[in-house]
Image (cartoon, rainbow over all chains, first blue to last red; front, side, top):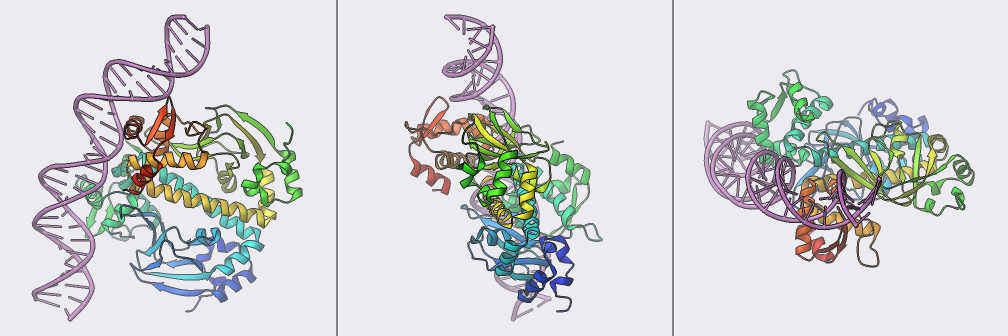
Length: 230
Length: 230
DNA sequence: GGCGTACTATGACATTTGTCAGCTTCTTGG
DNA sequence: CCAAGAAGCTGACAAATGTCATAGTACGCC
């Protein structure tokens, strides 16, 4: 694959790898491998030992955890530029979450040795990773509050706005990232039927429009008001 | 206060400060101040700019966030040995959560300059902080799953087991950390009345016993079964 | 082009949880 | 020691959400 040297990779600008030195990047680039993962296939599963991290070049992965009642809860959606699996590698634990592609993906796999060596020697890189993790932690705290204090309807509305802000819309005004109804319900933390019902309601009220699985936002303002509790 | 030099502080063994060098600790110790906070008083409030971090020597603080519906959600309980506020200092953001003492507290305030200097120069320290944050992030992810997939009853049961495992019991078999019913409901993410009702039910079923606000665990096994969904 | 499977949709109903109202019991300050 | 406010408790009811059943729809595969 051309242009596949980390030193030249634009993606890198968006994640902590930008704090690496030229030499460190060179080593990473030599040790990395490129992977293609099809929609629906796993990058890794909960409980698995990770031998490195994944840097997303293209596509989207859901990070989810199976709960006792047999339902998956999607904790995060990771996209272009994000690094997946760093938490487990840093804590030297097996994966707490499963990572499954929700669209075809292209990613680089970086062995943990490259990461660990740099973590121990380059404080700038470590600090950069730390800042990213601090950000993730804040987001996780916010999700906790939303989950426990907002209604399902509010969370569905919020999910749509999130999808628009983070993945954008296509030329026809539909959300670029199309999730199945089940995935939506797993993001929101509710039964699939409940999510579908709310989608129908939003459609009737003119807040969104749909075409097959695709969803488009029609009245962003009202959706936002709903999220904020009027 | 005697024995108040960081170099001699036992508390330090439990948190990332243990990765500091002798000289760094000396500087921290010279710049730190000791504070006493009474039960119910805030360490800081959501949105406030933090000029440093708090190292807990004694007592417990709740970290919570106010949601749009006017209810507090308690995201974490921090106790002896834990460092509060590091996320905000590292991300250079204002506090995302409020910290309020749930028992009388004794803590050290460490100005952010001491922290930031060490973060930039001592990779061991940075890595140690990173590991702690990775652990917090995992816990937060687990809370998200619990919040969205478990019933209120399961979460209440889990909260009691958590309180026992993390704060212990007194000689009479009551949980050492006594929370108000409202705080319990804010941990669990439910209405106060719902929490009270479930406490009554657990009492009737012989899972717990109470005396005033104090709660004691009677049948840990059954509580655990409840959490796991029978 | 049609068949089968998986996804979407909707109704009916059960269960869980929240809200409001009123009462009781602590706790605290004067 | 008493008064008053806060916290705990309970019932009745409403609202939100989950579950089960069933039917329609899309889509890949042969």
